[in-house]
Amino acid sequence: MTEPEFDLRDLHPKASPEAVAERQALAERVCRELRHAGLPVHRADLGFGPRSRPGVDVHVTPFIDGGVYVNWSTDAELRDPALDLFAQGIDYANPPPLLRHYNTVLQHMQAALMGILASAGFEVEEPDRHGHGSMVQVTGFRP
Figure (cartoon, rainbow, N blue to C red):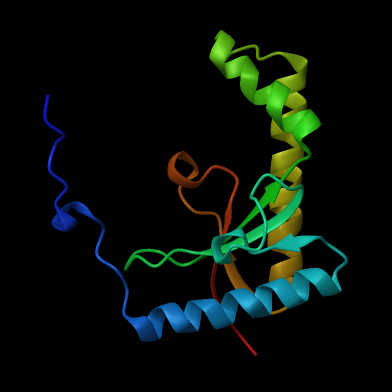
């Protein structure tokens, strides 16, 4: 059996190096502000620790339609059992209490992150939930 060929044209087009550098600078500014607010912040996209640590993960996507994204990660003791429930199959109309709690934590933290960042002068929005879950997108800074 042969492996399917990989075609680089199948990848999403990347943003210019200048655009990615601007996003990196914006991401660092986001990290500073969130640390000032007392939140644990990680840049796993730069290799500074695993994404599975609890706290805020700030990362930059290099694609043309990418940007700076902020996401809250709960501790594994909450996250793993909640996500394991999906593998068992759940009734989406009446999810188990653990999963409801996990989702509530993510929703409240998303709202808190949006409020903190907006107060600090960042332009934020909630991206498409299907592709980005409970992430926050930071689109700019207004002095």
